[in-house]
Length: 219
Image (cartoon, rainbow, N blue to C red):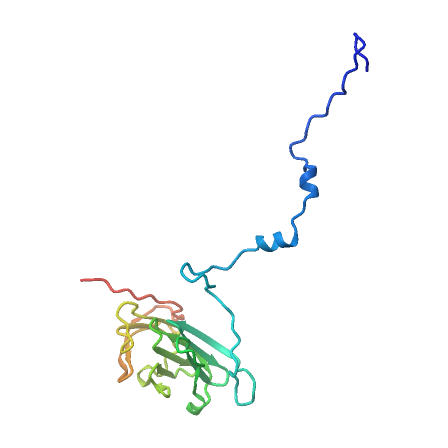
C-alpha cells in the first residue's frame, strides 16, 4: 500500500520453513542410470578386481536317474567341498583342479542315512556320521570310504580340529562331541584311520555337544 510519502511498499514475505522440500529437490528425481549406480556393489579382490563370490551352474552333476541329487549336508575348507546327498553318497569336489566332483557311494554300507559330515581346515580329512551311530572316514587320496570302528555307536555332533598342527598326512589331536554329553580325543590319518580314540569327558547332563573348540598352548 502507499506509504506516508506516497511510495509503495513491497508486501512482507512469509517466514521460510526449513523443513519444507525445495522446489528444485521435488522436481529433480534420480534417473534409472543413477539408481543403478547407487546399488551396492559386491566385495572385490584388491589385486584382481574379481568378485569374491560367484554363482555357477555345474553341468553334468546328476544321479543315475538324470535328476540332480538332494543335498543333505555341506562342508567346505581350503577349496574343497564335501556334499552329502539323500542318495547315500558323498561328493568330493576339489575346486582347485578345475574338474567336477568325485562320487563316493555309501549305499553299499547298508543304505543308512547320512546325518552329518565334518571337513578339517586342510580339506583332506572328512568324518561322515550316520543316523545309526556308524562313522566313516574319507581322505583326499582314498578311492572309497573306510569305516571308523573305534567310533562305532557315537552320534557325532561336533568336531574341533587342530588348526595349527593338522596337515594332509594327519589331523593330529582333535576333539569329538557326541549326542549324550560325551567328548572324545582322537587322531586320524590315511594309513591307520582312527589311530587314536579315547573318551576324555562326560557332561553331567546327557545333552548334545553342539560345539567344540581346540587350541594348543605352549608349556
